[in-house]
Structures are given as structure tokens and as C-alpha cells.
Amino acid sequence: MNERLRIVVTGLIAQHPTLGGVTWDYLQYVLGLAELGHDVFYFEDSGEWPYNLDGGPSGDDWVARDPVTTVAPLAKLFERFGLADRWAYRFPLGEGRWFGLSKPSREEVMKSADLLLNVSGTLEHPAHYRSVRRMAYIDSDPGFTQVKLALGQKDFCERVNAHDVHFTFGEAPSSAVPRTGHEWRPTRQPIVLSEWPVMEESGNDFTTVMSWTSYKPLVFDGKAYGQKDVEFKKFLELPGAVQPTKLEVAMGRLHHVTWETRERNLPPSAASLVHSHPDWTPGDLLEHMGWRVVDPLRVCGDLDSYRRYVQQSKAEWSVAKNGYVRDRTGWFSCRSACYLASGRPVVVQDTGFSEVLPVGEGILAFTTMEEAAAAVRAVELDYERHARAARALAEEYFDARKVLTRLIQDAMRS
Image (cartoon, rainbow, N blue to C red):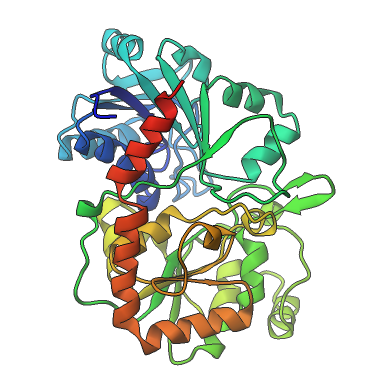
């Protein structure tokens, strides 16, 4: 499809002003569509309060109540990319206060738009956008999305059902993923390759950026769908197995105890530490198991520092959410795709993506501790080959021009 379309992209950039990776997740849709010649706009209308990650003046206020702290960076971001008049954001004060495009301009865009990409299902009321010709739901949390639908969460079901077509990052879902009555079409994160050049000099460490938990675990049909905390515990002893390679995690110190899944899968060495130090945070445990833990606000809190952090790494090592792993959804990380584009190999826990992406060079998948250690050593032994393969994989499978062209074709097809 070579037709120039008017397309609205949704996201959560303003809600997460200090998470550079989140900004890239949504921005690359906008930049990629503009690069293809489409008439693109960004709307953020989630109804969610922006996060205040430093606790505010009281140290215990995690909501940013001043729109200046979110609107100013958002305006600067889109001005930087020549899109100063292409964004609109509703700050959830009272009934909501809009910034960016005026009300008449927003209404004109919605009435004339050919396609709306509701990335991550971020719109609070997608039914308010039904004047758009076609609406597509982009599920970036496969397995968890289908479980919430299967649980019959009324508001969530209504939000998903308001769309004409449904896509998912779960590209190879197993039969364990609940059926919802929707046709879930496979898609993946678009990477604007020109924004992720390969840097000749790499760092020395394997790194990743992550949250120990992102939200409370879900329970469906007697099974718990947990977060990364469940899977990471299986690999706590990895630093000792891959010495002298250093493993680093950019992870915040916030500890949501009630969000954790109580799994008894700690190795004995870690279990004894936890038993003798009940006040430890996950970061404390990781450090004592040999991991280097760094502050994400300091090393990758904005667009440029996030990209720099990825490019200055040697490679990535990471686990996935327990829900992705247990139901074999085929999910592959947006962050890992950025590592690949930067010519950085990724050693990542297999969620079933090995059925749709080639693994062994550039992408090394693991399921066990032994496989994880062997993959790290393999990258170290032949780094240049894996680095070249990483960029080649990004060009073949994650290039925004290819990913978005296919997405638009599938979304606009009757």
C-alpha cells in the first residue's frame, strides 16, 4: 500500500517522563510512519497520572500533579523531530486538560484519520475515537491481555472490543494462551534503524533494563501469571558461572512486595541470604549474588541516555515475564530489538520467539541456567560474528519500514 494515510498513534510518553525506553517504544511508531510518508499524529489520552519517581517533596508522593513536568518534555521531544504541531496530551486534572493541538484541530484529525494505532491499548475511552475510519489494537503484553479478557474484566473487554482489528507481540502463541474470540494478528516492535547506528566500540558488560515487577500477578484457571521476579530467581547464580564476564542490571529500587509471586525457586545460596536478611530489596539480593545494579534514572532516564546505555553495552542478557514464558507467547522485547539494531547481541530467555526468529547467531535463546551460561560464553568467544548478525537481524526483522508497511496493510484490509 503506497497510499499516504492520516494515522494517529497513541502512547504513554508523558506518563513515563523518566523512562527512556518507554519513550522509544511509542516514538518509533511515529517516526517510522513519518519516514514512510504518512501524515502522522501522536495522541496521549490514557487518563493515567504521570509518575513522579523521586517521591516528590514529601518523599512519598508518586504522582506528578504539575503538568509542566510532563508537557514541557513532550513538547520539546516532538519539536526535536520536526513534529511540533503533531501531538496532543490530556493531563488528568479534573475532567482532563488538553495540551498541544487545539480542540478544533484534534476533532478535525479524528474525523479525517484513516487509521488509529492504539499501541499497548493506552486509550482510556477508545469508543470516543470511533470517527476514525479504522482502529487497531496493538497488544504489547501477550498472555496477560488474553487472561484479562478471559477473566471477563468488563471495562478492559469493552476497550479491546472497540477496535476493528487486533494485533499482538505474541507472534507464536501456544495453545495455553486463552482464546478470546478475537483474531490476533502477529506484529512486532518497529525500529527506526537510522536512530540506532552501530557503534564501533562496545563496552565490556552484558546489560539490561528492567523492572522486578510491573504489576500484580494474574491468576486464571488455577495458574499464576507472574512477572520477571519469578524467572530471574532461577538465574541468580549466573554471575559466578560466567566469570570474568560482568552482568549489569539497570533496575529501580522501588520494592512492590504485594506484586511479587511467592515462588519457591531460589537457589540454596540465595535462599540463605534472603532468610538472614528479610529487609533486603531485590536489588540488594542481586548485588550480593554478584550482579551490578545501577540506577535507571541516572544511566537511561531519557531518550538519549537510554540509547547511549544500549550502544555502550557489549550485549544484553535478560529474562522475560513469567507469563510470557509459561504460556510460550512468542513475545520478543522492544528493548532487545534496540540492542540488535545497535549491533549488540542479545542472550534472552526463550518465550517461543525461536519459532519465528532465527536464533544461534545475534540472538541466543535459553531456557535453563546451563544454556544461559553457555550462550554468554559463546558470545564472548566469537563476538564480532554475533555483533554482525545482530544488526543483520534487526534490518531483516525489525526495520520500521517493513514492520509498519505490513501492519498498515493488515489493518486496512477489510
